[in-house]
Image (cartoon, rainbow, N blue to C red; front, side):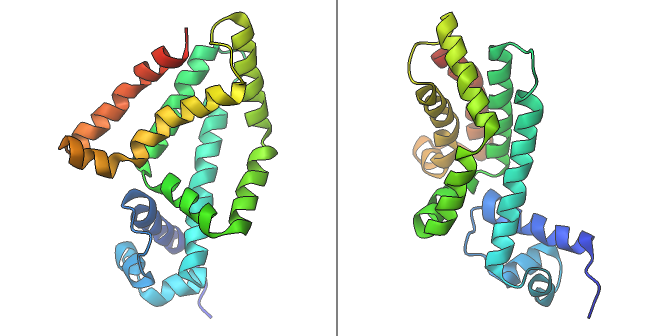
Length: 200
């Protein structure tokens, strides 16, 4: 049996990420993935056994990368709340621009697969960083820096303002008749709009 090469494995993963989450080609075949990676189709099966296994692997890697970046930028102690939110917006927006179809995939996968949905919800519930973030939000409300509401409502508003324009972009680009570059510029302008909308 051939020895597995981590470089080839990563090459296949990167090609799959590009097809699945950057281009939105969720139905890409193993042959299309192999072509994008510049390898033989049998290597895709050799490293990942099936297309679904590969799909789950690249999703896991992409989510872990985003989580680690959020911890690095937002999890720092002793930084002002506004700076923390700015860092959060930067990380989420950059990730969304890199992988604009990932959130669509996660939602659709949760609708199709109850076990996958349960895993995602369980991970969210036990996420200590999220619990800490909600407590920070509550503290800022008590200081008068944010309108009083349930902290989770603030988080929902923040994520909606960030993620929805990314998810809806294929439709909006056609309706607004703008190019990819123009739409990305609109998305980048949203940072200040979001800060003014949510913070006093």
